[in-house]
Amino acid sequence: MKPGSIVIVGTGITLGSHLCPLSRSYIENADVVFAGVADGITELWLQEMHPDVRSFAPLYAEGKSRHITYREMIELMLAEVRLGKKVVCAFYGHPGVFAYAPHKVIELARGEGYAAHMEPGISAADCLHAALGIDPGKVGCQYFETSQYMFYQRNTDPTAYLVLWQVGIAGDKSHARFATGAAYRQVLVDLLAGHYPLNHQVILYEAASLPFQQARITYLPLSALPDAEMNLKTTLVIPPARKLEKNHQVLARLALIRAAELEDAAAIEAFDAFEMPEGEYQADDISE
Ligand SMILES: C[S@@+](CC[C@H](N)C(=O)[O-])C[C@H]1O[C@@H](n2cnc3c(N)ncnc32)[C@H](O)[C@@H]1O
Image (cartoon, rainbow, N blue to C red; front, side, top):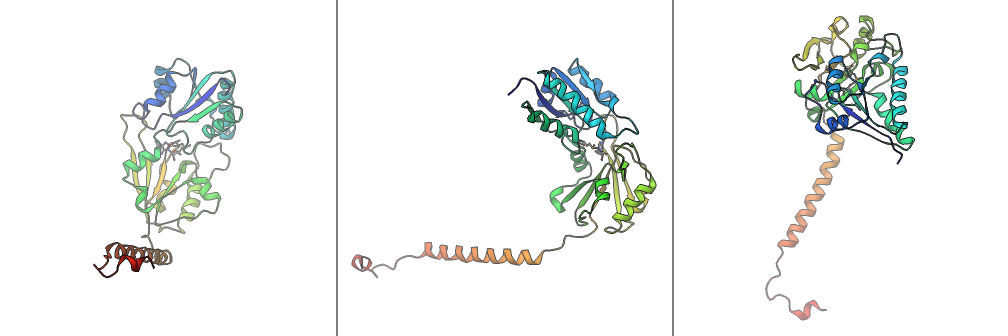
């Protein structure tokens, strides 16, 4: 393996409390740290852990495609890896959840023969499941990026939770905007109306990024989404609108398998329980 490495860590959502000890240790022992975090306060906090923290914030601009920004970020990180440095990049949340550059830089660095890996972090999803009391194991949960959900034919399951990320830029094809407007969201509402009644209660969720802030949890009818307040941190959560429906075909097949297992079990049990009636056979009878 060549000298030079990269580790991608997640700082979590809430400043100061979500960073795991392992990720902190990577930051403290790095040669250079890059920061793709949500605010300047988090950057200041990272600077307390390392003297050379380089922010990605100046690479973002309204009107500039985020694809260009991501390429620039990747090039900056790889340039330091190629110099043989131990590079750490801290992204907010979980660095591998709805994030392009972290996955791509790992792929490219590995392709060039450098050690590269990602440590998990606390995502907005983790905060959401805790704050809204949603257990994805209960009825299931679908995650989609909002614009992708709009641009492509997706299978919506109204018996599960539907979580739409980046709803604040719903319908943006330019990848260069920080917000879209009511007309774009109306298209989303019309699409969702194919699966949910317009008066269905949905949730706009924003986890607190600073310890003294409160999370925003706003319940509103689906029809009110176009005019609702949202920003780059808003996630839309749509609770199920229908009850789970049984899959009778699969249940019938499983019942047959179980019945066969029980019959087998009953046969084994009967075999084990069988006792040779005393004196009925002689040793000679068996050897025949
Ligand atoms: C590019 S993704 C990054 C997600 C991040 N990697 C994570 O693990 O949470 C940005 C989207 O994440 C969601 N998000 C980010 N911060 C959030 C917060 N504080 N509360 C709720 N959702 C948030 C929003 O849907 C936002 O549009």
